[in-house]
Length: 371
Image (tube, rainbow, N blue to C red; front, top):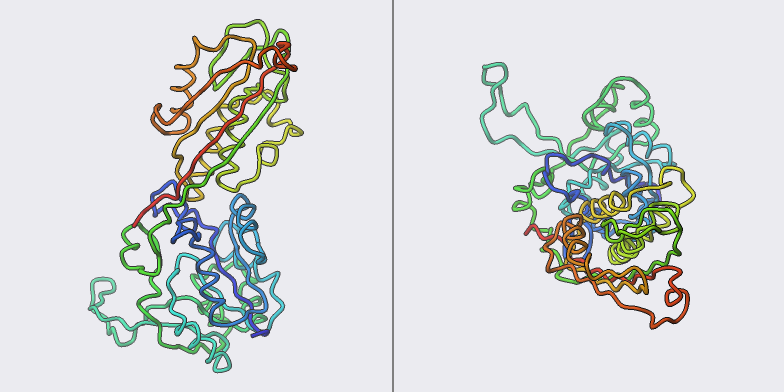
C-alpha cells in the first residue's frame, strides 16, 4: 500500500516497566520487541515507509537490525510524532506505539479498510464496567476506550499538531480541527505493555531465546613513564603506566570490546572515541560501567568473561584476586564468572622487550528472560 506510512513510537523512558531493560528491547525468542512489532505490521501490508522513533542511543543499535527510517524522538509523544511526520510524504499515516505490541493483524486490516470514511480512523473498545466521574455515575454507553494504531490523513495530522496544545492521541488532534473521526472495532489483544504484569496479557511475546552471544576483544598499549598504571581497574605499583588517551587500562578496554562484540554494539572506538576531549584521561571503570548499562538496557545479561593478560612486566600474580573482585563488581556478576590469566611473551616482540602489554578477552551474554 504505497499511500500509507507507518510510524512506530518508542522514545519514552519506560520508567513504569521498572527494569534495567527498556521494554522495546525485550527479546521475544531472539527478536527485540520493537522489531517484532514492525514485522507484525509488515505482514499485513506493504507500507510506503516504516519509521521507527526512539532515542539517539537506541537508534544507533536499531540500524543494525533492519533498514527502516529511524527518527530521533522528542521530549513528549507529540514532539516525537511531529519529528516523524517531517519524514512522511504519503497521503495517509498510521501511528502506533511500540508498547502496543500484540495488535492483531485483523485489527490493522480493519483500520486500513476504513481509511476513506473519515479524516482519522480509530479502533475502540466498549466499556463494560460501571463508571463514575467526580463522584457521580455516568452512562458507560457514551464512553469508549481508544486504542492505537490510528490512521490519519497526513496533511491534516501535520496541521493539527502545529500548535502548542498537547493532545493525548492523533484522533484528539484531528477532532480539534472539526474533522470527522470514524470508529472501528478494536481488540483486547491490543493491550499496551506498561508494567511487567502486562506481560501475562500479551501472548505474542515469547520467552527469550536461550542463545549464547559471544564476543572477542583485544587491546595493546605501550608503556609511558611517570604515569599511574591501572589494570582491570586496579592500581599497579610501578613507576610507569600506559600511553593512551584515557587512563590506558588495556584490560578493561579489551573487555569492553568483547562485551560490545557479543551485544552487536560496535567497538570501543565508536562509543568512546579517543578523538573526543570528554574521554581524555577517562577512568576506564566508568566506561565499563556505561557499557554494562547499555548491554542491560538492550535486553542482555552478562554470563561470564575470560581474559588473558600477556605481559613480561609488571608481575601480576599479587593483583589477580583483586582484579577479579573489581571486574565482578563492575559487571554485576559473581567473581567465579570472571577468569583472569596472566602469561608472558617468552621475551618475544614488544611485550617480551617490556615495552607494553597485550590483553585478549572473551565475553558471553544471554537475553534477559521475563516470561
